[in-house]
Image (cartoon, rainbow, N blue to C red; front, side):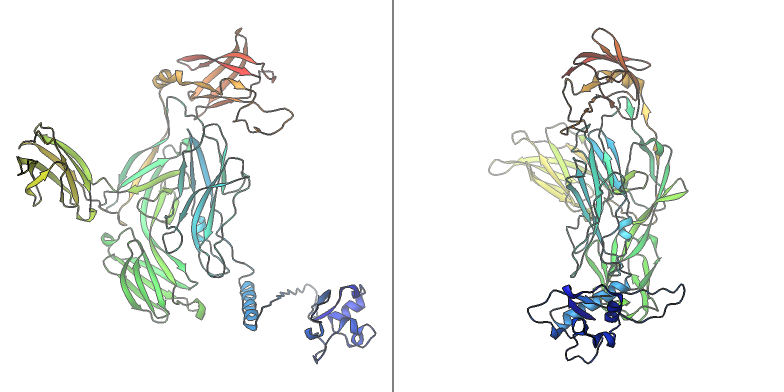
Length: 636
């Protein structure tokens, strides 16, 4: 390594080679003092930095290594790192970082990969859904799977400005713990306008590198960006929907699967089958420890997320990450691995360290392996549209082909009915402690009434299947039984009499386990001619009147030599023909509409391509069975 003043640089091959090779002949020549500054350093190959004055110089440096003998087809790869620090320790840390960069094949810290985003337009809404590919991104620099969450953005100016719509992150010790979702419905938009949506993924970061987020999409070719233009629904058309939902597994869960497919005819007739299992993930740490999961009792499994958290290399705790419970603390962890039984949850795990793991790749304090309840969804018994994805109750999921669904508990209070009496009295019920709820049919009866010493009226009630017999209640009084609170209301001057009775039916929610399976089938859209005839008067032209330009036009606010103009016909039938006439009944345009939506756009040009003049126009919308006649105005 040698330096010289910038102005002394000489573009002569022999001099340059002499510098690179620390040639003694160049050192002893008249040019030597310009390119060699060894000072007190006895090695001719390195200049002494002490020869540079404290005030500094305008320098350039030459670094080289060799010589090397290269044969035909030989290749040499050089990797050079410049490291520095205020102290020796800082410099060594910088050198270690440089070495880890090389070891990671120059895979520097980076965010998770971009998710694949899809979207469909509806009436004043957009439905967005995405996949989970980002959750399996390995950060080669840290050696960890450090995915943390998703962020969904919206733009109304084609990506110039973006607003954050939603932020979904893992439930852990980082961030807002909102929980992951895979779908979003935006109902704060206006028909006819174009909206861009883009989704990103981000990691959790660490003490050295802040959280990194994948880039937003910049055009409609990006996998994480979609353009959506909401539009009116077609009248008389029932969209694609779900039928035949059932739990066809051997489990006993009474949870309800709510399915909302996108309105896409390609889904018609598709059959889906869900199944549950458990998957493991290394959430914290770069440990090379495999996890084998064995279900020992499927009836004991629950839709929970568990954690194996290492306190140090030789001990760990088993946690229920869903409930926050410590299932067992202080498990011994011998070198190489061990079996773990999660008592009462029907699971046995085998932890095994990779025999080739380095000391740094073995478990250490703070490392966390999670075990998560997961779902798979098979399409038409052919292939999966979801494969072993972490699953939580109430979490919105979406398949790769656009079926959005979630699993929710049943309503605990199934029904409340009056079964006796006619007095002016009412009773309402609400759940106050779900853990105490029973599946039962209760009869709440008024046994009598009375007045206390200061003139306040009360009633006596009893509840079958409980210990409540003859309880005293005033107006708006409450009573509690089996996790249910009842509230009675009656007029104080007209006390209800004995014989007034109410029935209350309750159901106890039973969470799913891996025995439960859900089946559902998609039904295609339907068209009703009777409904079309009934709703033809809903057809409109917007804007009406059309004045110079429309906010819907894509070039609004821009200067164009020949502006694009458009109006929209909305609330049309799925199939119809639109005839446009002048007030003199001259036909100037015929538009054939065949779409799942109820919107058709017209560029205000007649059949010959010429712009129409200002004035009043008549339009006629015809189907095979009915028609609608109306007017619109164009002002210029």
